Amino acid sequence: MQPADVRVGDRAVLRKPHPCGSLEWEVMRIGADIGLKCLGCGHRVMLTRRVFNRSVKRLIPRDQLADSSGEV
Figure 1: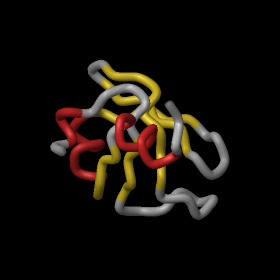
Figure 2 (figure 1 turned 90 degrees about the vertical axis):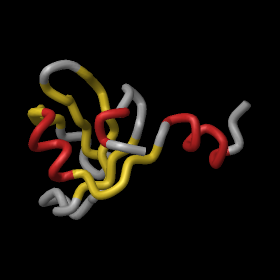
Figure 3 (figure 1 turned 90 degrees about the horizontal axis):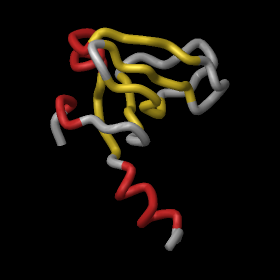
Figure 4 (figure 1 turned 135 degrees about the horizontal axis):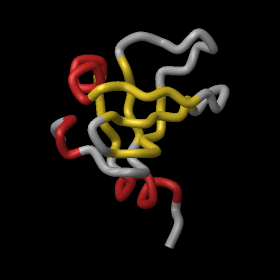
């Protein structure tokens, strides 16, 4: 999955850890900027698409998250 295909609810694993130690972020907002929420401490940030595309290491789609957690 390309970073350009990002949707609200997806999880992004970034290259550098947040100061709390977490690498995983949840996508909260899509637009000119991408809104992210740290899954470690809940801190919210806004990144430009350019910075987001450079920073993302792996993108986990929300569909895959629902399948792995056993939700119906």
